[in-house]
Structures are given as C-alpha cells and as structure tokens.
Image: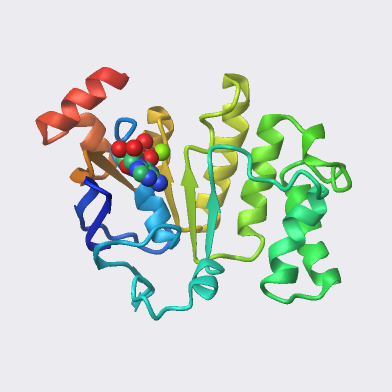
Length: 237
Ligand code: ADP
Ligand code: MG
C-alpha cells in the first residue's frame, strides 16, 4: 500500500497508509476498535474503494479503477469475524464453491482438494453436514479452509476469533500457525496479542487511521518506539 486514503463522508479512516507485505509473511494489524483495521483489509480486497494512493498485488496496481475486480478478488482469500459459511450448503459444497464457480474447476478435482483440506483439519467426517451442525471453532476453520482452497496469493483475516467462545479460539489460531508454516502470506487483524507476538513477522499498530508504528513483534511489544503504541499496549495487556 502506498499513501492509501479512505474516507466515509467526513470521516477519514485511513490516512496515508504505507505498508509492505512480503510473500510468506504474516502481518498482524493491532489497534483499538475504530482505528481502521477492517477498512484497511477491505480496501486490499477491493470491497472498499480508496480515495487516494495505490495498492499493489505482485506489482500490479489493483486500485486502478480499470482493474478486473472479480479476477483480483479471486486471488485473495478473506475470512471475517462472523462465520461466513453459506448455511444452505454442506461443508463440502462451501469449500468447493469458489473453485467450481470462479475457477471453473471440474467437480471431482474441487472435491478432492476440499476433502483433503477438511481431513487435514480433522473435519473429514463432516463433509455432508450443514454449517449449523458445527461448533463456532469448526465453522471458522471451515471458513479458513474455504478461503485457501483456491490457493490465493494473499489471505486476509479480520478478527477471526472475536466471535468465538474462549475455549475455541486456540484451534482456529493453531490453523493459522499451520498456514504460516506452509508459507501462506497473511494479513490479520486481531486482538490476540500473545498470538501476534508468537506468529507475526511484522506487527502494525494503527490509531485513527494512521500507521503509527510497525516492526517485528519483539520490537513493537517489547520496546515500542511511539508513546501511542505504549499507551495502547498498556491498556490491552
Ligand atoms: P476497526 O476494524 O479497527 O475497528 P473499522 O475499519 O471498522 O475499524 O472502522 C474505522 C472507522 O470507519 C470507524 O470510525 C467506522 O465507524 C468507520 N466505518 C467503517 N466502515 C464504514 C462504512 N461502511 N460506512 C461508514 N463508516 C464506516
Ligand atoms: Mg474491525
């Protein structure tokens, strides 16, 4: 991102964001509610148009209005806080949907990929179940698997554990850790500071739409350079 600005009416919520996300990196966004984390992720997925600046994906300016939005979105996986599964589709159909409809993959191949991924997260026996039969943690893991089934170049995760009962948070974060080990490139907004400290390659602190501070977790958590970062961390710890 280069000089990204975004306003909703009079409310400017991203103020000149410069951010580099390198391949295979996990970048964690922290900041108070309303600081712009979700908006940043939405602009990266072209769910919100930016007012100024540029967003590049592998060198291509995807914020250019002439860009093919659907094609670009197909290169980026997204998981939100609320479970995003389609309630009327089985677990298997949820996970195969994008590959079949967007990527025009043959059914067999899409189902093979989905079955393998679901087995890997221990849900191989839930293929024919509907989402409401699953726990929140299981649903959110299916949502993650659905997002990665088409091998996106980038995965955006927006407070994916915030709606979960505390005892279910761990299994979802463990899956994120596995994806990191696989080399996935992720940008993640979270309030799970201990997870951010462990898993992030880069921690980014936002306040009022300004990127106040960024650095490796040891630095941002251990020796924050900016008084606003210190103040925020003192409050959440
Ligand atoms: P965070 O995810 O860090 O809590 P958000 O990006 O959701 O922050 O919100 C940043 C600011 O943008 C807030 O002031 C919020 O009210 C505002 N905002 C977010 N989405 C919209 C929208 N669709 N319309 C108007 N204002 C919005
Ligand atoms: Mg948010």
